[in-house]
Amino acid sequence: MKLLENKTVIITGASRGIGKGIALVLASHGANIAFTYSKSVDSANDLIKEMSKFDVNCKAYQSDAASFEDSQKFVDQVIEDFGTIDVLINNAGITKDNLLMRMNEDDFDKVIEVNLKSVFNMVKATQRTFLKNRSGSIINISSIVGIKGNAGQSNYAASKAGIIGFSKSIALELGSRNIRSNVVAPGFIQTEMTDKLNQEVVNQWISGIPLKRGGTPTDVANLCLFLSSDLSSFITGQVINVDGGMLT
Image (cartoon, rainbow, N blue to C red; front, side):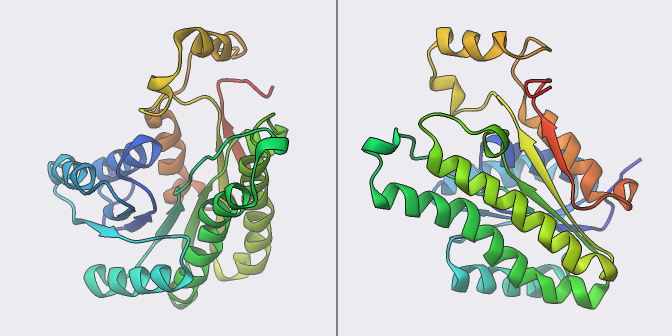
């Protein structure tokens, strides 16, 4: 059974890592996928090839989610290309980690702009379509760091905590129009980024996880599948951790 047959899903920052995992799982369930990437054209093209086996419409757009203007243009183009939008998944994000004493203003501003302002930009751009359809699912990818904080990541933690407050407010604002807004908060997820970490560091992370393993992009994607589908039609304003029990 395909849970997302004929639904159109936007995913920001999907050319690799968690975003790529989400795109593949949702496409396998019949979703048409419009996704953004910033620089990696080859990775975007590779993902389109992978998704083509699912016999769905998919298209990549080079767009900066941190730009209000770019976000509006992107959404307008998706509506022109796909006809409508049913699900928005805000996944685009960056890190610029440092202790506060060494963090400069640009390191703080850039992380807030890409991680948090992008969510405002994209929800603002898609809101009209969701209101017209009187339905929609907004899924914002935060992090357990936005819940518990982390030394050396005050900018990242602030951006991810901001996503939670924003998402809960949107759930209250748009719920009466059957538009849902939820947050997915991944823990330690093994991607290309974490593959560069020293094995000793990885083992330290895993030792603090009750399930004794790192998560995979598919673990996050399966939750996004549920929240994108009608199975979650009475769920909004929630923060759901995908962390193997790390914050239990």
